[in-house]
Structure formats: structure tokens, C-alpha cells
Amino acid sequence: KNIYAYKEVNSTNTVAKFLSMNNIENGSVIISEKQSNAKGRSGKFWESPLGGIWLSIVLNPQVEHSKLPFITLATGVAVANALEKIGIDNAEIKWPNDIYINDKKVCGILTEAIAQFNTIENVIIGVGIDANFDYEEFPEVLKEDSTTLKEELGEEVDINYLIKIFLEEFEKIGVLFTEGEFEKILKEWRKRSYTIGKIVEVKEPFNKTYDAYVIGVDKDGALVVEKIDGTLEKVISGECIIKK
Ligand code: BTN
Figure (spheres, rainbow, N blue to C red):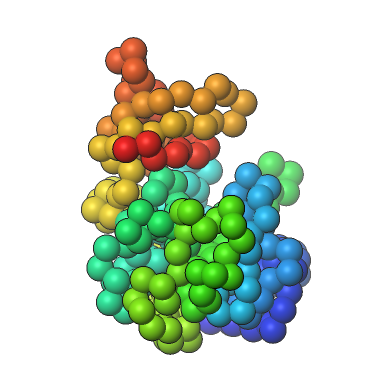
């Protein structure tokens, strides 16, 4: 596969988007040592110092729109599987796509779809892993609920090795995706879930936030929650904050 490696870019997702408009090969990976203007979910800024893993994958998935959320869920599983292979066996996925270790976030995933004339042309999957920098380098606001692999393992990780393992895991789960084995992806995701069985505050776009108990994920990858009044709700997009 093609790997485009940079020392510094504004955002690997932005570079990926640009390259995808110029017909780069399906599955190409854009990777950078640092990012100066990286994007997190909900328009937030994403800290990307030297020592982290900042990459984006360009995909041209030939599936129905409704199946696209599975790409993000599958990517989370691939990250958790890769972490397990380097000795972290307690990585968990917070719905929809944050990876947590010991109740702290260590990886975020930002999936962006590029549509033209109403059809999805490409999907850019951005993965950011807080690998080898020190906790002290986090801005104050993030310190409370973020961590790094170095912090958790007590030593630096071999970044290139982890990238290689992650791409292998991504390819493996990608096969399940192309074969339409969505239930298998969900099974792996559920095994790693940090969210199921917890009380959360649900934040949906254009909706009031509310507290709910997380029951599970359904066949479309939506989060199924029970509200305080006992009604069930499906959360298709948004965020949830774990309360207990
Ligand atoms: C989140 O908010 O949790 C998602 C963070 C995604 C960060 C990654 S780093 C590589 C890629 N390039 C970006 O600008 N963002 C993603």
C-alpha cells in the first residue's frame, strides 16, 4: 500500500482529503510526525506533538451509506487489537470511537466522508494515538482524562512497529467489512466496549443532553440507551460522557 510520510502537516485528514481528490489509491495512508492544526471531533482542536501517531487512511468503500458507521467502529477495534499486541490488554472502546486505558483516553478517531453529487466518494479515517510524549506536555484541560501509551507502559513504545501492527489489524477487520460481516465486527466491538452497562450523559447534535443507561449497540452500530423514564432511545451520532 502507498504510505505518504511527512514531518509536519496541518492535518493528515486535510492532506488525505486533498490527495483523495487527486485519485490516490484506495487504502493509502498519510502519516505525519507532527500536526499544526489537527482536528478532533465536534470541531475541536487536537493536540499533536512529536511522539504521537497521527495518520489518516483514504478508503473508497463500496457499501450502502447505512453501513459507513461500521468503518469507525472497526477502526476502534483495530486500534484496541494492536494495543493488545504490544502488551496493553485493557484497552477499551468508548462509543463511538475513543480508545481508553484505565479510564483515560489514549486515542481518538475522526472519520470524514467526502460526498459528491450526494454519493460518498471517499472516506477519510483519521487516527490519533497519544504514544510517546509525556503527560506533562498535555494542556491543562486534557490532563484530567487523557493519558499516553508511555505513561501507561512506563516506557516508550516502538512507534513504527505499532503503526505496522495497527495497519495489519485494520486490514484484517477491513476484510470483514468488505465481506459484509457486520455482526462479526460488532461482536469484537462489544467485547471491547467501555460504554455498555454504564450511566452516561448523551449529547446528540441538535438535541438536549440527557442521562441514560447504556444497554448496547444495535445492528446498525447505534448506541441503545434507556432513559431515566424507562424509554429506549437509539443514538446514531453524538457523544456520551461516562458518569459511572
Ligand atoms: C477525537 O476528537 O477524538 C478525534 C481525534 C482525531 C485525531 C486524528 S490525528 C490524525 C488525523 N488528523 C486530524 O487532523 N485528526 C485526526
